[in-house]
Image (cartoon, rainbow, N blue to C red; front, side, top):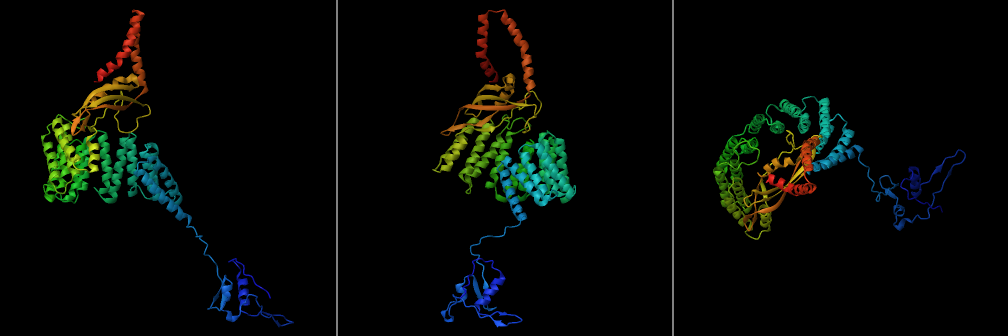
Amino acid sequence: MTKLKILGSSRISLAVVAAIAQLLSGQAYAQSAEDDEALVAPIELDNRLPEDDGVAPEDEFEDLIFDADTVSYRLVEDDSGDDWMEPPPQSEQDSAELKRLFELYRDALANKNYVEADTLAKRVVELSIQLNGLDSHDSAKAITNLGIAQHNNKDYEAAQLNFTASINIIERIDDRLSIALVNPLQGLAATQAATGRPDLATRSYQRAIHVTHVNDGPHNAGQVDSLESMAELYISMGEIKDASSIQQNIFSIQSRNIDPTSLDIIPAMEKRAEWQHRLQFYDNERATWRRLIQILEKHHGNKSLELVEPLKKLGRSYLFVSLAEYDFQTDVSTASGETYLRRANRIADENPDSNWEIVEDTLLSLGDYYILSGRPNRAARVYLEAWAVLSDGEEEDRLVIRKDHLEEPHILQRVYPARYYNSLREDDGNQPPGNFETGSIVFGYSVGANGRINNLIHLETQPAEIEDFAQPVARSLRRLIYRPRLEDGRPVSTHEFVYTHEFFYRPPDIKEKVEALEPAANEDDEKGDETSTPMLNESIEGSTTEQPESANEEVT
């Protein structure tokens, strides 16, 4: 008997399958021949079981099953161990990768990891151009995002090139009035301002405003970002009137179609008061806060916690009376401001919805107000109340806040000494031009129980040739005001503060100083020749020991 063997391969040909099926079903094949007709007897299989055995052929041959519809056997492919799946198209993979990289870019930007954001943005640009082509909105957005990262990295030249490239792409695929131009125009303007070109920055901001005007109508909310940036630019240029005019425009946009007595007007009024403070229009600021408080009282009552923050800001505004170099002015009448701050504390103390954090905050505001207005004794009493609030109970959070707020000195009034030596250039927060180098002046001082600076001592200037720059810096430092450190609820002095001031100078300034000192040094040499050698040595020793003390005396 002939015994058939079914191979385990699932790719057996259909012809073989048909032959096997016919053999197993007992069908005979007739061979046609012109000279001989003979029937071929059925092939018997060794492993064919009797009909009454109960075992079907498909049970013996695992690769076959019987199909009742066709009354035949067919091959079954076993794919139980096959996990292979057809991969998605390459374009889908690239799109998913682009989305992933963009999310990483946004996270890096939010975390101020600008170097990482720059690297990711470049990969996004490359992949976007590969997927969408250069002349596409997606690629323009990707290039704008790269410019934003480079701007934050202070790589202004590269940022400006990329913002310009994005603008050019949008103009090619749309037109010069496309709303998509607004974002790269704002980025370009910010970069131009950072590189000392406020004239170009103003034009870019104005174009962005014009584009929103054409697309969304005059005085629309989309203009606010550009208007605020323009106002910042005018402030940096000292153009206060222009900045004020823009601020009025912003308020008009934000308050449009809003009932001036409704709560909906509050955000616009808060923004307006903040701008008035920045522009040093303190009387106008106070008027805005008063009007805002009246609206809150109308809707919430005169004991609402909603009043606490506006009352604090209105009270603090009485520390400011005119344009000044420093944050706070201490030689002003402060009775009115004290009234508003005390009312804020009273509301926080009596309102049933209040808590100890709000009470402590209002007490610190009042105590700081007394320190800044030159009344340390009243401040000490208020700080003692705050100490008691933070020491009441066994809550660990209170003790942590007490340590942070009261057991360490905190600067209340900052100062901004000149950053450029022998130059009219003002510090704008950006890196100095390439012809400037960085120097430093170091001072030591103490903070008294009244929050004022004591024992100011000049420690070092680098380079030493321009030590005279320490004097104007010292005059600024004397205006520093601190919230004093407390021990057991009482203000105490704190010693051994070190203040390092970095400044910028040009190397030729040092050369000029040295050349100016050479004639004086030659005169001293001539005088020294007229004296004896022991006297000369004694003079040198005395100058080296006395010079630092002399410098310190001038500063203090």
